[in-house]
Length: 397
Image 1 (spheres, helix red, strand yellow):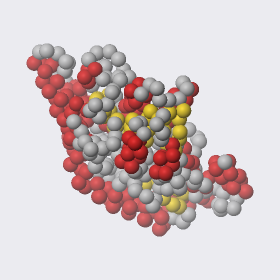
Image 2: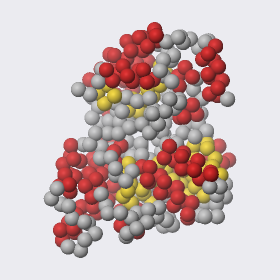
Image 3: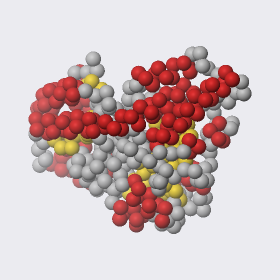
Image 4: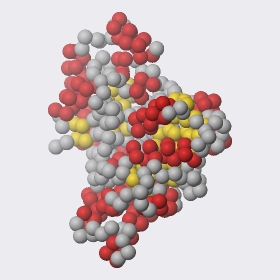
C-alpha cells in the first residue's frame, strides 16, 4: 500500500475523471472537426470541457486554449508575449521559477533579450519594491509563478500584475500548482496569459490549458491547422480534454474543502517539528498553498530520507520532479539563502483531497527514527563544522 505525498509532482486520476474520458478512447472516436454527426458529438464534448475549465478559472470559453502540458503553455505564452511587442527586449521573472520558464528565459538571453531575475527573501517571498524597480517601459513581459512548486509560497499576483500594467508589459502567470488549490477569477484580473496542467489536478498527463485574455494580440507558437481558433494546431486530444473538463468541475467543488488539506498539512508540520530536533519549515511565515510543506532536516541528505521513506511505502520528494535527477541543491531553496545544512536535507510533502489522516500519522510515526539513524551516520552534526561553513560561503557568494 502506497502513502502518496508527492502530489505537486503529479496526482492520481480521479475515478470520476477516468469514467468520463473512457468512452472517447473506445466508441466515441470521431474527429471533433468533422462535419458528420458522429464527429459532431465529440466536438460537443470538447466544447463542454472548455466551459468547465472556463468556469473553474472565472474566464470566458473563447479564452481557453487546450494544449499538451504546462511546459508547452509556458513556452507559448512567453513567445506570444514577445511577438506582441517585438520592439521591447526586456523580460522580468523570478529566480525561483520552474525550469519551463527559467530555461526559456536563459535561451532568450542568448538571442539578445535582457532578463531580470527577481530575488526572494528567506521565506521565499517576492519584494514588490524590487518588482517596481525592475519593470520599465521597455519591459515586454513579466512572467511569474502563482505559487512555488517546492515550498508552496504564494506570490502577490495581482500586485505584480498591476505593476506590469502600469508599464505596458504583458503579464504571464504559471499557475500549474495553484489551479484547483486556490480560487482564481480571471475576469477582472491583471493576468493576460495563464498556464495550467491537468495532471496536477487529478486529470491525465499530457493535457493542459493556456488562458489568453480576450483582446490580447496572441501569436500561435505551434502552426498548422485551424484548431483552437487558429491558436494551437493539431487534432485535439479529446479523451484527455474531456478528462480535464471533468477534473476542473470536481476541483471547483473541492475548493470548498481545501481547509481539510491545510489542517492535515499543519498537523504533519507540527508533529514533525515537535518530535524531531533541528528541523524547520522552509517558506513558513508567509502565504502558502494549503497542501504543501517543505521541511529541512539538518545535517542529512534528502535523497537518503526519501530512500528510507520509500522502504515504508511513503512517496515524497526533495524538490521539483523536473530537476530531481540533479545532485545540485534546489535552486529555490538556494535563492532563499538557506544554509547548506538545510539545503540538502529538505523534503517536500504535498497532499491532495485523497490524503487521509492515517497517512499523515504513518509519516509522523517513521520520520523520527529515519532522521535519528541518518544523523548517526552523518559526519556533520553541528553548524560550527568548518566544512559546512565553507559550503555556506560558496552558496551565499
